Amino acid sequence: TPSDLLVRHGSDAVRHWAASGRPGTDVAFDEQQMKVGRRLATKLLNASRFVLGMGAAEGGGPLGSGGPDPVVEPLDRGMLTALSTVVGSATTAFEGYDHTAALTVTESFFWTFCDDYIELVKERAYAGGESARAALATALSVQLRLFAPVLPYVTEEVWSWWQDGSVHRAAWPTVAELPADGDPALLDLVGTALSQIRRAKSDRRLSIKTEVPRAEVLGPADVLSRLALAGGDLRSAGRIGQLDLRPDRSAQLVIACAF
Image (cartoon, rainbow, N blue to C red; front, side, top):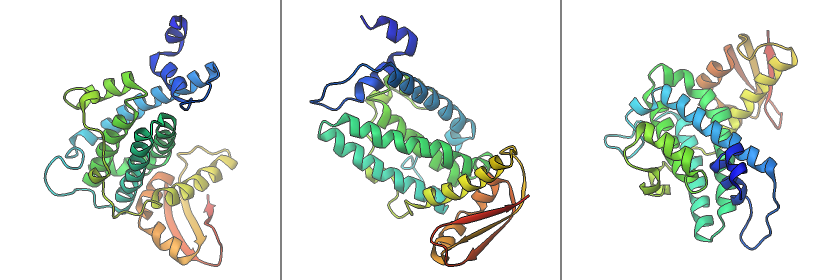
C-alpha cells in the first residue's frame, strides 16, 4: 500500500505527484516529485501565514466583499490582472480534463507571487496600506481555490484560518473577480529589477538586508516609465536610498548599485 509514502511525504505531496501525470500517459513512480509537492504544500502554508500576518485578513477582505475597490496601486492591480489569466488558463485546462496543465500554470504563478510580489509589497502591507492588503487577500483566496483539487488538506487548513466553511464548497474563482485593467507584465518587470539588486548584493557576499545608498537603472524610456509606477516598492524591497532611472539605448534593464 502507499501508506509509508503518505507518512513520509504527506497526502498532499503524493497527490501532487499523481497530478503531474497527464491523462492518457503512463506516470513513472518518482519519489523526488513527492518531495517537490511537500515543499510546495509547506510553502503554501508558510506564505499564507505570512500574508495573513501582514494584515491581509483585516484589509477589507478580498475584492467583491463589498464597498469600493481598494486596490489602486499599479503593482497590485497588475499582479491581480496577471492572476486573472492564470484563472482563465486553469479553468480551461480543467474543463478539458487536463489537471496537469492547471497545476503547472497555478504553481508557476504562486512561486512568482511568493518570491517577488510579497517581498515587494510587505512594507506597504505592514504599514497598513489598504491596496496591498486587499490585493494580498484576494490573491490568497483565489490561489487557495485553484490549488484545492490537488492540495486538499493544506488549502483546507489555511482556509479555516480566515474564511467560513470549507474551501471545497467555495465557488471556483472566475476572471470576473479580478481587475482586467492592470499591467500583467509589471510584476515580472519589477521582479527582474529586484533580482538584479539581490544578485549585486550576493556577488559582494552582502546580506540581502544591506542598504544600497544609490542604484542606477538603465533601459528603454518606456520600460523605465512603467518601472517608475512601482518605484517605491522596489526601493523598499531592495533597501535603496536613491533610485535613478536613466533612459538609454539598452535593450534590457541594467542596474548598477553603489555600496
